[in-house]
Length: 114
Length: 108
Image (cartoon, rainbow over all chains, first blue to last red; front, side, top):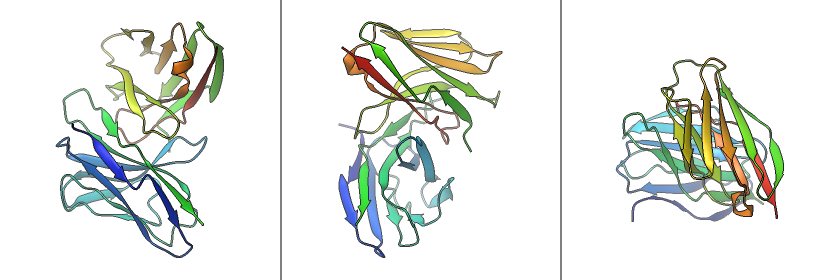
């Protein structure tokens, strides 16, 4: 059963802590993405990766870091430098099929700072 | 910066009514126009998409209308049902920008 998995579903962080959100896909997609979702603001791009060992900053990369050591995995670390990390985080991957350009999303991780 | 501008922010419709959501874009190089549907606490999922070589695409009760000259594309939900209550997003075909979202509430 192909798809994207994210873990954990809920995550609580204390002030000053770094936390890592997991994203795994078995769709054989090259491109993967991280978005942040806040109420009323839609989806904002944090980082994206087109191929293994390469990634680019999105619109709101400050306070976040990523790695792409394997095609299947694209973990996101929320660092203590991110001042307002409480949000819903979504990982996605993209179908490479010509002219479809579809993104497939995981179920999300809700991060709360205590 | 958003490459697509979506409206309205929210709408309420009675069961059986029509919901219409609009999306305007700037970049005429775009060649794929998707709409995503998201239920609370879940990730978005592709609902329907259109390419600019057609002006309309229908899948069940969902229709995309594309107006190339106006640089707009719209989602129409016909015979709206309570199960359609969700947030809908249009996306820039570059996949790096989404509209702000429209929360649709269907009242029984």
